[in-house]
Amino acid sequence: MTTSTGFDIRRIGGRIGAEIVGVDLSTDLDPAIVTEINTALLEHKALVFRGQQLDDAGQLRFASLFGELTTAHPTVPSVDGQPNILPVDGDEGIRANHWHTDVTFVRTPPKASTLRSIVVPPYGGNTLIANSAGAYRDLPEPLRELADKLWAVHTNDYDYAAPKTDKAAEHRKQFVSRKYRTAHPVVRVHPETGERGLFIGGFAQTIEGLGPSESRDLLRIFQSYVTRPENILRVAWTPGDLVLFDNRITQHYAPDDYGDLPRLLHRVTVAGDAPAGIDGTSSRAIEGDDAGHYTPAAA
Image: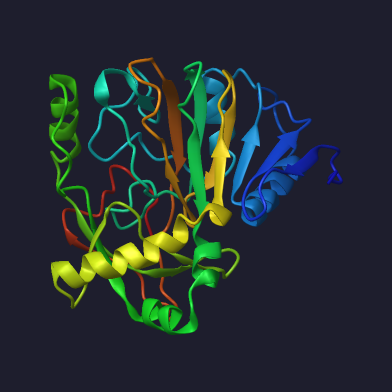
C-alpha cells in the first residue's frame, strides 16, 4: 500500500506487523507523514523501519512525535547522560525472555515503545510481538464474557528465576528497588480505536478475588491465546533497524537463543494513560506511588 504522502506500508504478518518503506527517520518529518505512520500503527500495531541508522538523538526525536516521553524506567538506570533511554543489553545474563507489555506494574504504562538495534548477534536475538486484540477475538464467547469482568494485579516483584550472574542479581535488585502493585482490567479498551485486547503478560500475577492457584490457571489460559502463532510477528534485527509498537494492545518477548553473544538495543517509550475496562473504570495503584517521575503527564 502506498500512502498519500508517498511511502509504502507493506504488511509482514497476517494479523500484526507492517514494514514502512520510503521514510527517512533522520529528517524532520512532515506532520502529514507522522499522522499516516500513527494511522498505520493503530492498524498494524507494530511497524518496522529498516536500516535507519539513527543515533540516540534521532530516536528520541522520532519517538517524541507520538507524545511526551517517559524517563527510561521506573527503577532501572538509563543510558548514561540520556534519562529517556533504557539500554536493553543481553550481555552478562540480563535478558527479558518472557512475554510482557512494557511497565504494566505502574498505573500509566507507556502508550508506545521504540526499539533501535545497535549490536545484533549473527543468529537468534529476534523480538516477537503479539497482537492481544487478535487474542481477545479468538476467545470462545464464555471466556470473553469472563475476561470482560476480571481485573489482574500486576507487579514488578514476583518469583523470578534465580539470577545466573552477579550482574543479573544486581539488575534484579534494582528492578524491585521500588515495589509496585497495580490493578488493571484483564480486557483493556484501546483509547483511540475502541478495540478490546487482553491486557495481561508476565507482570500480571493474580486475578482480583481469586487465589494464587485459580489466578495462575486463568492467566495461563488467556495468555495461551495471546501467544498463538497466528497472533505473533517475529522481527529479525539488522543493525540500524527501528521498531515502533503500540504498547496498549501488544505483548513482546526476546528469546534467549543467542548464547553468550552480545545484543544491544535502546528503548524509548512514549507516556500513556491509565488503562480502562469495558465499563470505563480506570486502573488503580495498590502499592507504590503513581510513578509520576516516570510518566510526568500521567492521567
